[in-house]
Image (cartoon, rainbow, N blue to C red; front, side, top):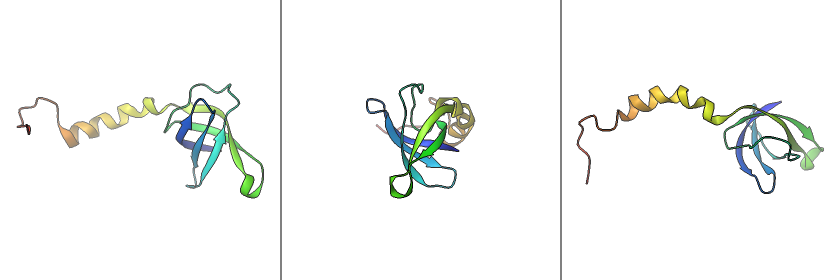
Length: 90
């Protein structure tokens, strides 16, 4: 399955992942996974049953930083360019 990282604590190798269906699960890595950051798209498998069910991240599919280009145009549309001649509050 795939999901987006909500948060990750590198020192503990644990975090929260939101599944495609919107569920949020605790996840862990085995330390072999590359540096994980919030909003990364990851592939994971379920470990455990019932209330003890967790996710284990297998690999990072897409880094959040790679999606920045998608939003650059929207940010310019919403906020304009810095120094575009508009008055600023002081």
